[in-house]
Length: 254
Image (spheres, rainbow, N blue to C red):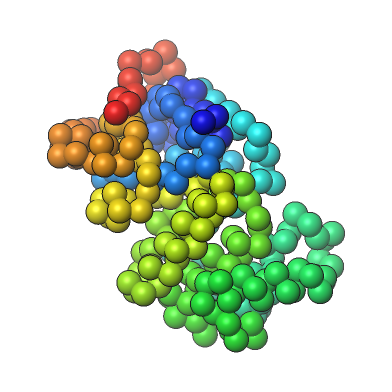
């Protein structure tokens, strides 16, 4: 299969200190992939760089047949505010931003699509509810509905199951699998290794550098997980500034 995203010796840094260091590899088009690793491994940083939220320090990210308008990005729930005085329907309809002219109202067709998206995620009848009235699971379902209406080729999800119950997790996994069946490229930051092996075909194991990249059941083996944990624990918290000419990191494909 052809690549959707190619990472060319990618480094992403904060104040020249690398959070993601010389990553090489690609996500193929239509893949259902997880990015995992220990805390502080650079998982969310990599996703934000792909989404265009963080700048690339060195190397590059190449998109194949994808533009910025083709990307839907869902950040961690902790990064989102829920006190905006808008309804659930209005929030979901904000996913049509690339089709709307400024702040004009949504069309009848867009409203129908937003209502249908809420039905898909199990929030039928929640259209008029305010965001602050939703539980954590309901809010996450509404965010997934917003992704649905974006009709994106590339969907980036950062820890989408944090602080939600198992019923909501199962419902959202069903939505993700439907996106995969539709041929969309889905990349998701996750911590649960068993969940990844059961539901995601491919996996990138990070510990700032790439520890392993390939099929999930091959990547999430004890030796690679030990290497990821050891690498993360052995790396000083106060990393030296990145050497622009240090290209020693190698990607392990399995």
